[in-house]
Image 1 (cartoon, rainbow over the protein chains, first blue to last red):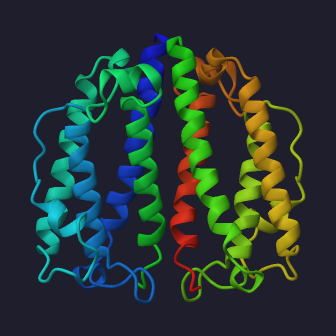
Image 2 (cartoon, rainbow over the protein chains, first blue to last red):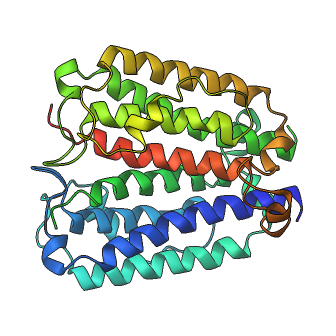
Length: 160
Length: 160
């Protein structure tokens, strides 16, 4: 493997590990448990699965990987906090979106050439990138993986 | 910047961002708040700062960066769950260790040559590494960054 291939493999594996752990936790929760708050007065898990799906879906756009699948989720799960909008989409519907979005990303990630991970992401101009070359696709992937880990740490706290 | 330099910079920056966020949260908590549970019946923050410090300290060993600073923390914060051992070291002492350990790691990371991030970590034999070249220093760094993000997501939930 070249250096570029190794790097891309390691970063994608880290992402996939975090997604697989989250999948496992979601698969073990009942619909009723999705309606529980992660801690008193905090987000419900149903909100967090929608939030994570919307943030992951937006990776399509920021990495230039084609159209996102569910732009309608942003208004509910990114622009607004939990409990601002009711009713939310159903748990089975959100689980389906979650799986579709991550499946789509996995395929698109596999289609990127290793060196493309070090190219600028789409929210940056060429001029900005010349000044800050570390703001590339790889940094977006690491940042979103950390974001997922952050919320997974919360999701596992909800009362079973 | 070469590909190797860019990769190392991005991964180290992701680590440092997570550490800086955690530092900020710790700096805003009173000693009393460190004694609170992140959720009813779960870990206290004082346990999590010790746990994170011990896990980060062990990065010295697994990445071959020299002796770790506080091996004595493992028995309290890794081998045992919260509330198994009392009393714990004091909050000011643990905050000092946390800062020292991450400061030491930052320096050691800066001293690694970019290509060294893709070499095997110390818990692997040469034979295993030949089979799984993605189990390298970079993968350890990403894994520990995710581990930190996971617990940071929990720490911010403790009642203020």
